[in-house]
Amino acid sequence: MHELGTIVYVIETIEKLAEEEKLTKVGSITLEVGEVSGIVPGYLSDFWLYARRKSALLKETELKIENIEAVTYCQSCKKTYETVTYGKECPYCHSGNTFLVTGNQFNIKEIEAM
Image (cartoon, rainbow, N blue to C red; front, top):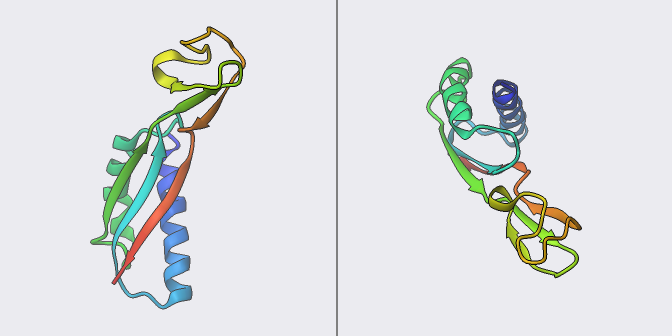
């Protein structure tokens, strides 16, 4: 369950930014979570509700999560496909000469300052 550590990192990052920018309140935070990032969005939400209570700045801040689809590219046939459905082997030409294009990232996308 590295989601708790991830939420602690997000909170520390936002608090540092808020201090630098002299923010007094944050309305919402939007996170991008890749489909194959290993992070479970539901756990993030649960840990957020717990951890934000310890921060005066974020006590009422809403957490928004955007899921990023995992997409793989086949170097043999030059097509992309859904990673979760087909895995490493290309469903078009059955090549294993593929790589993940998107879907393993985790980003703080947006902070709504108030």
